[in-house]
Image 1 (cartoon, rainbow, N blue to C red):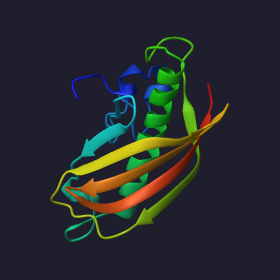
Image 2 (cartoon, rainbow, N blue to C red):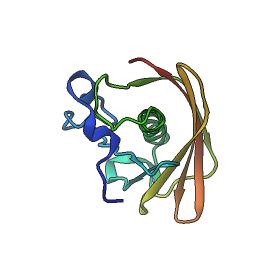
Image 3 (cartoon, helix red, strand yellow):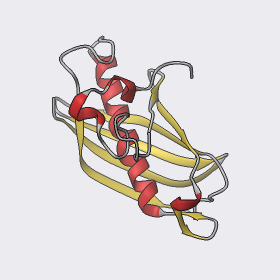
Image 4 (cartoon, rainbow, N blue to C red):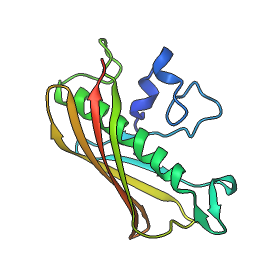
Length: 150
C-alpha cells in the first residue's frame, strides 16, 4: 500500500510508544496500513528477536499484535466517523485485554504479515481480531479489546 500508516499521524505523547511510536528510535516501528476493511502490517524479525535458533520470540509477537490491533482500531474509528486520520480531536485507544494463541513456531527467516479486522464496535470499546502469517502459514492469532481513551 502506498499510503501513510495510521501511526504516522501520532503526535507528542502518542508518538513515543515502544511498539508503534515514530518518535521512539529504539522501538519496533509498527506501521498499520488501513484499507477500509483490514489493517495490514509486515515485519521482518532481526537476529535479536530470537527465542531460540530459527524461532521468533513470543513476547515480540504479542507486542506486534498489541500495537497493530490498536492501530487498526484507531484507523477504523476515523473511518467510521468520516474523518481523515490526524484531524482533531485525536482518536486514541489503549489495550484492555490481549489474548494470543501461538499455533506453531514462527520462523525467523521470513517476513511476518499481520492482518487485523474489527469484530465489534461499541461506544468506547472495539474488539479486533488479527492473524500473523508467514506466506500462507498462520503461526499465531490474537484478539484485542481496545478501549477508546480520546
